[in-house]
Image (cartoon, rainbow, N blue to C red):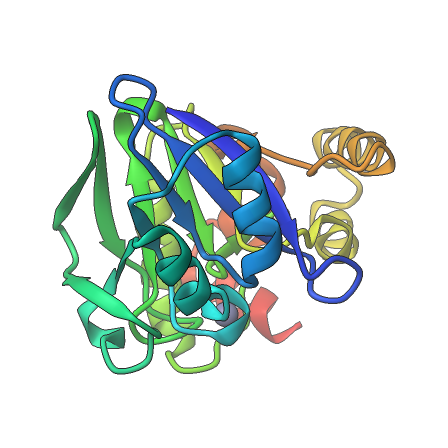
Length: 238
Ligand SMILES: [Zn+2]
């Protein structure tokens, strides 16, 4: 599966939408179109008409482009059934554990409550890719708006259970925002310093900091490296 990163709302929210193209069938989808114009432009540039819009959660900065992209390409909108009343234009509500086929590429739906109730991961095991929305960012995690710290801890454990060689694709470019706490909690560990050097180098060239493997993220992200629930909760309150 080909994955193209699309920067949306640059300079303010720095959202990432993603264009996914199943290369065997040419079927494509867009993840979290936070605004329509850059997403439609990227689809046209890659000469594809997305059949689906895949949402990670209902927040406006992930779904604001849904209706326009849906209408433009006649795409179907897919999200968690708990968000069926909150995701604009939703056609197909899915549940935790459901699978979805994007052409020949299979996705698994993994429910990760915490940031919101109804947040999901889109995990493509065959492509070793997971789209994490506002649950996981580089070196940090999403704010807990609707769920509880306990639920976020459970969600982090689900994410950590995915294979180490999985690449993750977050909903925002927040690497430099997460850097301070990652350096603080790791006592400037060399792997965190190297992570940041690499990220800064890429960002200076207007490239996304990622994608990063979960193996590296589990070592460097202070919320993934917390070894106990108590440590996780302490870091949240810091
Ligand atoms: Zn959000």
